[in-house]
Length: 542
Image (cartoon, rainbow, N blue to C red):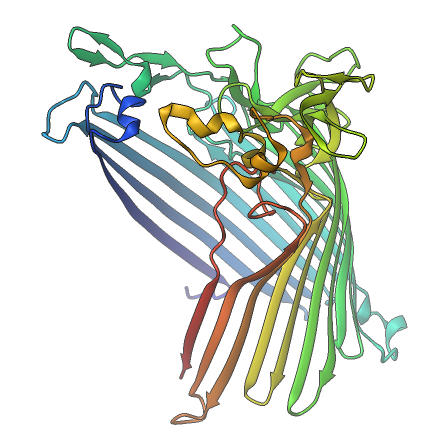
């Protein structure tokens, strides 16, 4: 706009749509027709259709201005609107199209997110920098009284390399000191309607039969009308550095985080709500850590260049407050880490401990270290057959150490890149092995397979809480390897073609006995192998 050349507007619009269509036909002679459905051999024609829509509107304005060559100012203000919608329809008939007592069910839900945000940047003489931001976010997951969250931040930086007292030190190519404080919000908690009283249609095997017709029942859901945003405030101090004309560069950051009103699903006392567990704000957590990033270029000639990058993070977290009743040790605890079914919880949130600490039974072994099926140790070290003698293991699914590695080698028109990442000190409970048993051989009146581990240990029944199945899940995964060649000057100096081949999920180094040690919740129920992907790429530029 004339007279406002320093002002610009940006508008982003997005729309995503997807549909899943699942059609399953199960014949009369399938064993499941005698254990599921109507349990009388009636065949089943089941049709599920799921639809997803997401809409985005993002509008913001930028203003940039320089004053007297030493002052630089930029400001941004904007608005964002998002809508997530999903619909599920399930119909069930027999193969002849007859209604077999299952009503058509519909599940429609939607989530809205609204945000106002602003940012102000100021720089003086390319030495001192200030950034301030403010976000106001609203989520329809929360009630009108708790819907809005306000999250400010401020950051200061001193680019020391531009100071006169550092001029003439040729080995130093960059040096900047940073200090920041900020708040962020979290509203991802699972259900779209965690604050509202709602009803859920019953499962197939919970319907009631009157005469020759089956009727759906409805049950009230658990809810928390006062649920609100989870808020994390972070204090950070960091330094950026570079040496030898940026042949070596990196950063070091130290931080402390305080999270209040943690969001999680927890069990609640019987009769206090409509469900045995609800999604709510459970307490506060404290975290601290150090992050280090380093990049080096050991070789740089006319034809060759080799770069290596790595990052390392150490993080320690502990729960400082829980909104539940304390136990006899003056600690508040709540169960988490559901393994499926009713009451199978393998982890605890406990004050003074890392979140998602495993809470298990101590497995007993004979004098030769051999596994004793169904035998555990109580608090006094005495053998017992009760799995209810549990203890806080001090081991969590959260890793205290994370790291990443990458390297790139180029020779003339050739380029080779390798990337890897991993973690150390985290644990996974192998529930697949723990829940398997000889009993599974003849469940549902059919013959099943059992795991080799079950046969070798002669595990008669499921041992769902035995710490024998708690394993160290430290790992290093080579994520991808890529080799490419670039053809330059195809028809003019600006045209080029890069041809590449690559592999994703190359190999994983780990002592974990299961399929994959990298699980978000640390409980291996039924994970699938990550696919190894072979790729070929063409990239044309002109």
